[in-house]
Amino acid sequence: MRNVLAIAGKELRGYFASPIGYVLVGFYALLFGWFFYTLLAFFDRQSMQMAAGPGGALNVNQMLIGPLLSNATVIMLLVFPLITMRTYSEEKRSGTIELLLTSPVTDLEIILGKFLGALGLFAAMLAVTLVHMGILFMFGTPEWKPIATGYLGLLLMGGSFLSIGLFISSLTKNQIVAGMITFSVFLMLWVINWVSSFVGPTAQSVLTYLSLVEHFDDFAKGIIDTKHVIYYLSVIATGLFLTMKAVDSERWRG
Image (cartoon, rainbow, N blue to C red; front, side, top):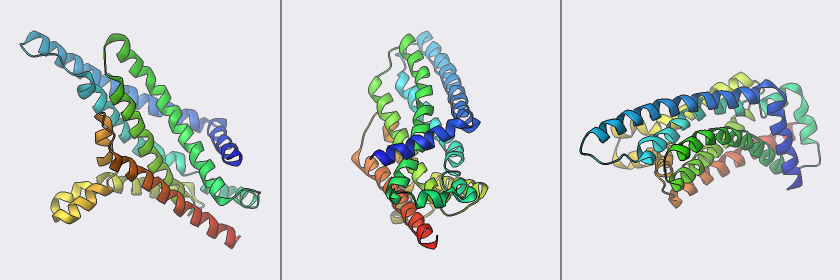
């Protein structure tokens, strides 16, 4: 575990040793803030209309926080290829992969360290967005449980994206190629359920289950369903396993 944490720390420091870490965190915070502002403005208009009529009060979790966290997944689609494309591709391009593979650490420790380092960067992005949640608690009374489950869902979904991105990055020396392929795969997993309405019921169920986005909806509503947790953990485990096999083949070729 010490080796894993050491590699994770090295990876995390590597992101912030150059402007890339700050740019990614700032970009994520900027888009999240824009979504927050637009949804808050819409919620405010709707609340004023409800106050002028006979209707009751609006639910801030359903009208604002749920859609906000769902929109945050769109940002992940754009940002995560930039995070993962350098994890192995840069090591191969610079030649440091040979030093890493010949060091006294196992392939699993290398992979887990890189995965946790990238996940730590994503956690830093999410930590910045807690400022917006704090504003809601200062001026309103949202329920904290749906927020907690929503952030848990974001972490699990982010871990799934990262594990897939790590695997793709381990297959090529070119960061641009790794980024483009990663974005294409992410986009496919994003829209795969769109074609489910044009196929039979069995294929529809399979395509819907494979969609990363479909499994997040319940988290945004404050529901933790074990089938969604198992799905995300399975995707993470599969991505890391494939990465380990790719790294193992690199070791044998080296």
